[in-house]
Length: 363
Ligand SMILES: [Zn+2]
Ligand SMILES: [Zn+2]
Ligand SMILES: [Zn+2]
Image 1 (cartoon, rainbow, N blue to C red):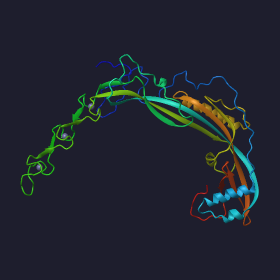
Image 2: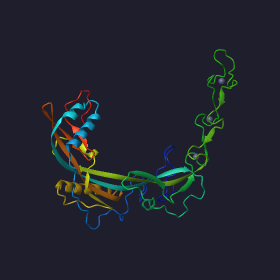
Image 3: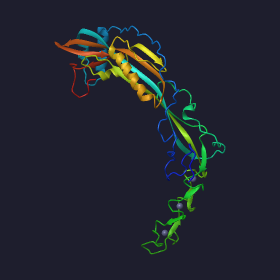
Image 4: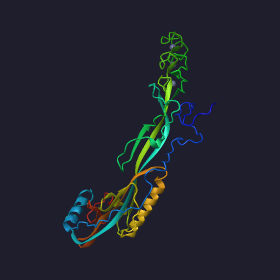
């Protein structure tokens, strides 16, 4: 067997299996592994630059009316919470707190190429001798919408090769699998005995021959090759699969409240810092050291995870202040507590006094 030129597909794959390139030394596109981006890609940190300032934050003050309205809305959305207590309870204290949320988004692009084939129908589309396929990272695909996940497939230009169909060996037809090429099958009515069992008469359906014309191939013994659709030749080409992904790192600072922290990831806060660029730099001087540490950890983690296997197209880091109000109230002479959180004024009520017991969760 002649050694194949690098970049050509294996043209003798096992029957029924899609064509995959075999491992040859010096190949970059072996199978479906992501292709490392070129070293001169954007996304490598350069000079330190000045970052946007932290904005002085201001959370709108919580009032008793707003706190009660939020609770009434929450109670109305729960089937087993009564609204009477929410209307009658006496609010004793509103304690306004807040917590910081840090987020890093890394928008990355990865590329892999795989061999694919299709029936060859358009003469002239094949690669000319001596032409090398374009490097997958050099294929222009246009700019994707930023920070949105997406997958696009396209052909690598100049990668097409035309070869005889490996399934039918270039005949365009393949042997019928039902009659094994004979064009006739056993008569199902007389099961090939040529006679009806009871009457011992000649079988009408096969005229006493015991065999019938094969329905699958209409008696031809062969059918159009499904792989090349009768075209006899296949065009093999490299298909480029480009995946854009928005990778998110999120950290919420410790708030020391009797409050499930995961609820905070579903609400929004007041932006006090926004920084977007090809790459962003770790925050070092935020008043709350936890947030600076989270930023340093996030950027290190993302660059370790994505810089070698993909190209970082853009990064965005934000700090939000999420308001939390602790509402102390009294009802029927007993003290209770609920929380209002996020700019959406969502409510978390641990021990709301007026509840039936159909077992729904309290969040
Ligand atoms: Zn047949
Ligand atoms: Zn018959
Ligand atoms: Zn074929």
